[in-house]
Length: 340
Ligand code: TYM
Image (cartoon, rainbow, N blue to C red; front, side, top):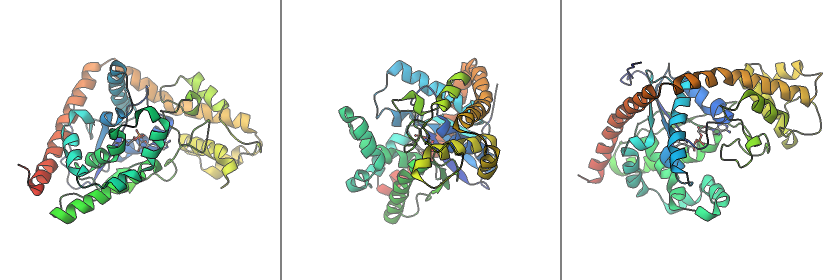
């Protein structure tokens, strides 16, 4: 298979998105909240999408497993509809400018700003035995990922809004000192899928780093596992399928959101459809809808997985394309700060 990747269309605005290769695959939250939107945006925008492997080593990874995860997650992006002909798809560590710009931007970021990041607070509570400085400076690397490519928009879920805000502040500060170097990126948050919650504790977001495997659906989970996880999903005791702004209803609201995003049905249609059913029936229906939603992805993943040479070629071409774009910004930054 051969392909070209046309990123030269200047009429289109640019969007940039990244995802960590933690765990064996992405979650349903990643798919509904992020990847599906990225895939849909490829027609309208110049898209850059990368596997954020440098971010993932803030948590200890087993090297050979990690290498496979990076490869599989890249493959999964293609299976989810990311098209290397339309987008620049790459692995972060293959483009050296990310780490280089991160150092420079670190010198334009205040300690206090990083201390306020909620993700740092959460992760240092979760991994008290390894509060490394990478965990603390993580948002600077994320700012570098973004600002290198001068994107107009960064599509993220609710959880990444604070990091994006910091990237914008760093860019404004740098521009203030050195003239207009960076485009100030705007967040692009999908209305309904901005936050898909855990099935085991609906007060938390669905996350692949959750210790409880029943808390999340992995895109590559087999159908029977998906159904089982939905059957176990935490709800309340009311047994009425209605979407209410009430913390007690967070579990059922989450299931209604997932069903709505999986089937395209509106929330009121869903409430009518299940007016005479209890949670047991509804959980099964949600599970079945998600199985159907993910089936073509699993099938495409199996096909792509057989052509490792093609995936490698995609990674190589995507990295070359991204590196060329990133080098332009990095050169400008070095010149502005007086580096040779
Ligand atoms: P990550 O890998 O946690 O998630 C990737 C994308 O999926 C979204 N997301 C969700 N959306 C809805 N519901 C959920 N439960 C859910 N979980 C995750 C995230 O908001 C994100 O859009 N730090 C980033 C990766 C990154 C990045 C970047 C993103 C590194 N550099 C530059 C954008 C721009 C992260 O850990 O995402």
